[in-house]
Length: 295
Image 1: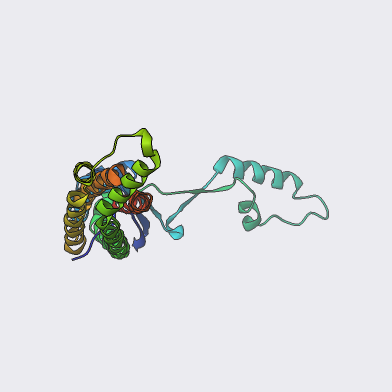
Image 2: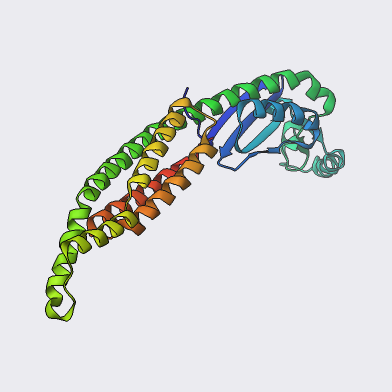
């Protein structure tokens, strides 16, 4: 299985008899499934079937369905403006006997603007019933194209999320290393500060200094945060590998990852560890941005 993106686009045309049509289906990210149809007013009978088909294909996303339906050019009706033609014939009759005037031809009269008018035939309900099956078959094919596009985009997103999780795991490893010698570094830093104070401060024994350092180390301990990061990384990998629908769960995990990164930065007390924490937060933001497109 693979992840499915909520973004996609598909377009497909078709025809039967004098009718021609074009389906256009577009989907974008949305917190739920929102189906919006733009169809000719006389196609209300197809709306329920279209929505049912979309619900089977998509679980989340805003899906916009548009249908343009018309007749082929050869099926247009032409009407003669009788009044205008009669007026032209009267004019022809008045000038028919004048020398040098060629006799009028019917094709010339019909070519006069406004004499012959093209009337676009309207698609009525009776005509529609005959092609509804073909319309839905065409729509189902268009929906298959949309689903494939969403899956292809989902596979690309899955690869990107996997890379980001690898990068985050590497930063977590660096944070683990940076935190490894923090107790010794804190002890050394406190001793240097006490030495600088010299006679101003009361002497502090090595035992008391070790106790204070231990208290500070407990407060600044980030092992729990690192363990939880590992757990969240594992869950995220399972969700990415398991396929859709996983968008909501991945979004929740990205929030949890951000919470742990914030705590890590707050506890760092060390420039190197702070830099790692900030880099981790940046990757988590990118991760969450991509997750917003997952179904």
